[in-house]
Image 1 (cartoon, rainbow, N blue to C red):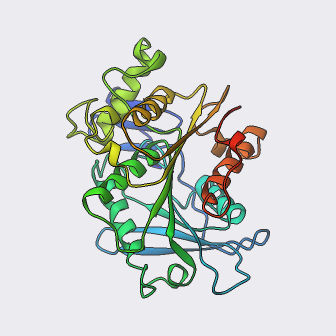
Image 2 (image 1 turned 90 degrees about the horizontal axis):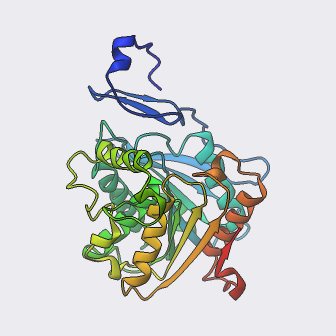
Image 3 (image 1 turned 30 degrees about the vertical axis):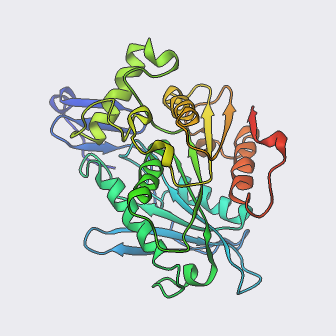
Length: 336
């Protein structure tokens, strides 16, 4: 967080105020108001999950936090979770308490290896930089598929036939766009993206579904958020944010997509728009939805021990293990 105190004249120059997340000034400065704490990597005494940090692109500092569950069989190969954090493209990191503890809990409960990507953030690093950084990390991950990469945890324990990408909010948007790059530039042989988990995903459009279309203040916030993150954009019909204009949507290179919605979410309409558009696109994978009533955006991070947050995590854990055991039919589509 920028700790400087701003004068009243600075306050007059505010371009976009999205407290409690961030505040951006007309000269490009940003006050990051959340996600600034750093949890060091460790071995969790309760779950046995180990974590460590790696720098993957030294020139830019792009890297990741890796997580490994407690291993009983040294030769065991586990599903690989690639997690991309949210925060409006502007705040949070894999090292903040919210994301460290959440990803660690997924690793413990789903028994997966995880790579939580540390991409460069807007507005200093506008899109497509976050897409490029995340793609670079995904390629680095794929370079381990022959078991001779630079990271021993991936060489020894990752099952590259069971790769899942999960992101929340802006992170879900990044997940979608990075996965689509694999259509034009396939990953190494043996690397298979099985599923995408889209948690309260950030998408938009000129004619979105739901009340956003008539709520001018809500729509303006969503519009500006995209402009701040991607000043070079062509607008709300940019295919990176509007799935209806995405030319390769029907070719999304995975077997399954699970979308999570929350009833009181600011960007719920965009998430529903994504679900409905993918459903109609001709993509032939399995598309599932979990809709949680009466909850706000990323409530599972702010209140992770609530009944609904735990139910949501259980659904995601099941999703990450679908190739190990199939889900019962009654879990394929649900709402809370």
